[in-house]
Length: 197
Image (spheres, rainbow, N blue to C red):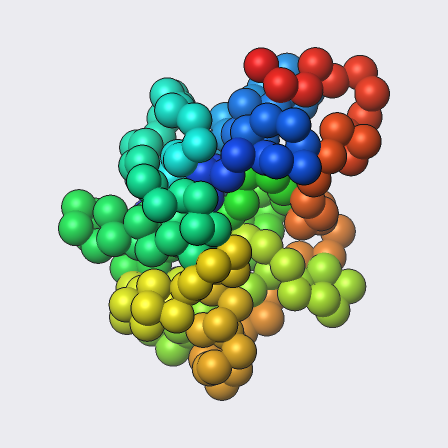
């Protein structure tokens, strides 16, 4: 597959329900932000941009972009990430992942990229589904970035765009590759993890 798909990790939140920024939470020996970067790079995305906010981040293998408006919600982080990619990267699409979903599998990223690359420009948005339900990650072709950014508001990401343009959305079955379940509180992770770094 071609390597013209970038990766974007939204990692700016303060983790108020968790008790600290989830980007710094450690799971199986790695911070969640590092796991998310490996997820995207392992799926063939390059470069990978991480949007920080509540806490400064240094992330090997990624370009970190600070979102000064992080407290307004995920929408501003998606806008900041897409803006950074638009200015500095020639990628034709981006796969967006959330930092607090450590069980998404690399195969899901690969399937999104495969569907997009094999469609020869006919796929604008590809969304991972699990047992028929939409989840993450989501691939966005470059032509839709401006409208996705314009509609992203509050604590939602691309959802308003997906609702406004269902005809542009291609569902990609990723059942069995992992899950896009969120980590919201320490109880969502197995007890042997050392949680916040």
